[in-house]
Length: 323
Image 1 (cartoon, one colour):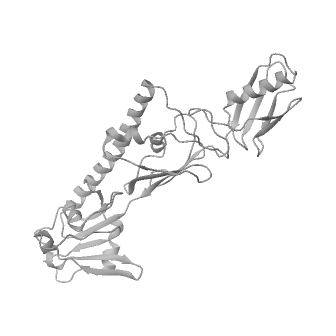
Image 2 (cartoon, one colour; image 1 turned 120 degrees about the vertical axis):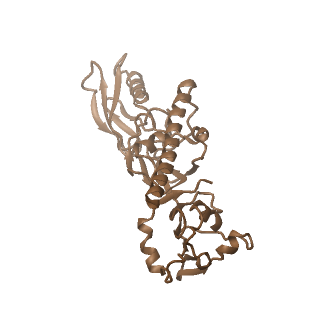
Image 3 (tube, one colour; image 1 turned 45 degrees about the vertical axis):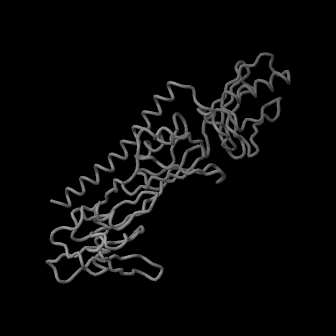
């Protein structure tokens, strides 16, 4: 029954993390309704800066439909050129890249009036397809992929659309803007009240990657054997991981505890003075991602070898260390 209980506890911890993300979404929505949106920082889209934090902007390669009312000969379906322009009859080139559809309509209207083509033009611009305007999500989310930047597209909106975090997700998210410049790293706080602070606005063309967390495995005669997801701050020690695993059972042969560590030369087996550690007679031992701590049973004379331990990792329950 113990592995089943451990699995349920792991699922509860994962659910708690995703609930915290949802709380952040709801909290940020309330804040957004109570106060005007802050000015959006400049985020280049192929060199063209967006004018609005809420409306997607037109960029090279986008397909647009221009309608000039009462002047069908001037209306047209076209594609934005690589330099950000479209060609309009009797007007020539009009720069629309970096503008919202409303702003592009105003730019075309101005050119028609200045060139005395139409005295009082009424123009609408509809973007049929935004090329390269989605937000890419990769890494430890349930549904990696490209998500539309239309509508709300803050960090937690996109995380929710991607199905939330997996059980192997770290608390670190990297956001890269188009062109790979000015990437930022977001650390998800444990306190739900702090989530709104990191709920940043994403722009069309951004890529966000949820980092995979390191895992330390505690196997054998402990109360909750399994993998323990490390937080991004590191600094975890052997005793803390063993404590998170509930400590050795009564059947543990504490003196035979060992640790397997991956090195460039393969697996290295390290003796662990667990009995002295528990009695505070020796200094605690730092652990690293992918370390395997094995506490053998006093009831079994032959302990598991390294190969046998490695085969059990894929079926191990995963837990998040609560401190």
